[in-house]
Image 1 (cartoon, rainbow, N blue to C red):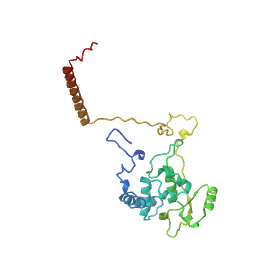
Image 2 (tube, helix red, strand yellow):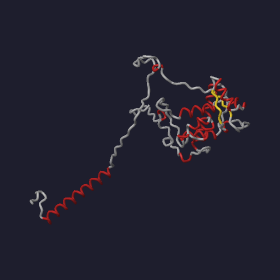
Image 3 (cartoon, rainbow, N blue to C red):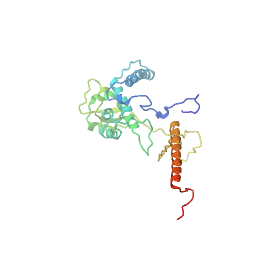
Image 4 (cartoon, rainbow, N blue to C red):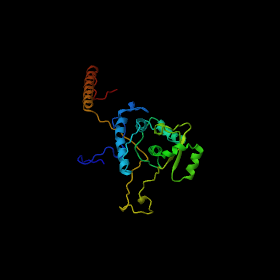
Length: 268
């Protein structure tokens, strides 16, 4: 968290507010879909040993992890430059994919939903991308038609089924995507909400359950105040003195040649 004490932790990336390409010193112009960049290569060097460590720690299997560079390239492009990328359309159905069209050429915002006020596209993007990559890959070989896929979605309350076009880099080499296929995913999501906001008439002054929440603003306004530079102040002073001097000499000249006192009213 940020602190006025420089000796304490100063986290500029709290809540991912500064996780944008400019702050991360990434040149957006070099990011293209399915193009290898220094950023994507650097990410690959980190995520592969990290994934290998997770598998070894959780499953107990020492397995070398190899991630296709193309997958990382596309994810970097979609997250940092354009959410409305081909990848999100390949891992979702048409109705869901159309919801990302208003965010064309927009990087993914790292923020939480403010439902019911508004819903950010971050959650559905992560939901469908994770659901696709963590799918039941043994189910890919069944080649179910779209109608059968929808029927399974109504009958199975544990898994989620989505008929998608498919993302070739994450498919097996013997798979072909002619007319799409059915994806079965075990990904589930739940609301992270404190019991303090669910229990009727709960005393919010108690510390039994957390009651921290984020502020919301219905109206946001901004006022700009220009602070002049030292050079601007000096130039303004000189111009003011010049105008004052010119006005003084002009009045003296006018009084001398017109013989009219400027301090006394004229009589008619």
